[in-house]
Length: 175
Image 1: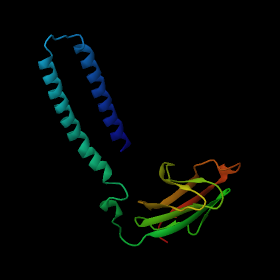
Image 2: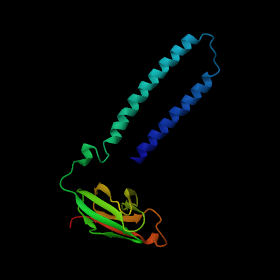
Image 3: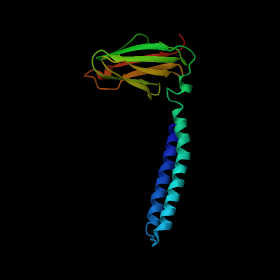
Image 4: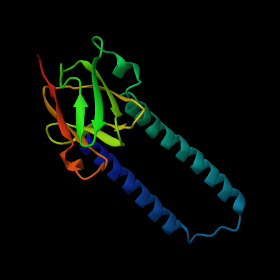
């Protein structure tokens, strides 16, 4: 997915570069009669608008399909497993640390003292989900772990001198 995003970004950067070069090359031309020039400009602007709309609208729809509130992403195969998490200086308190793979999980995150950043990392240490742990408020992460393994939980917001020790794990596998 990241490779695709890189390629799309590269293509868009090239298009912008060609646009700047085109404008620079054609900026020296002067016309005495502005009527045809205005007509061409409006025609070009209209065509450009529809070209951009036709390219970006499908891309927008495709990207929105994976968000948690889309019907495809919300559909699950049963009730959500729940993990209640409370952040303390300097440890995480979880009422369970084992969940089933490919099943929805609701992680309810709060704090007993100061703000903490609750970050879940996969085995390659890529951030896959995060939430803010705040006193007096509960944030919920809706997630489905696609594969078995051990997922690390790290504090993502500096919370004091022992912040670096604030780690725990969520084990995903058949119990």
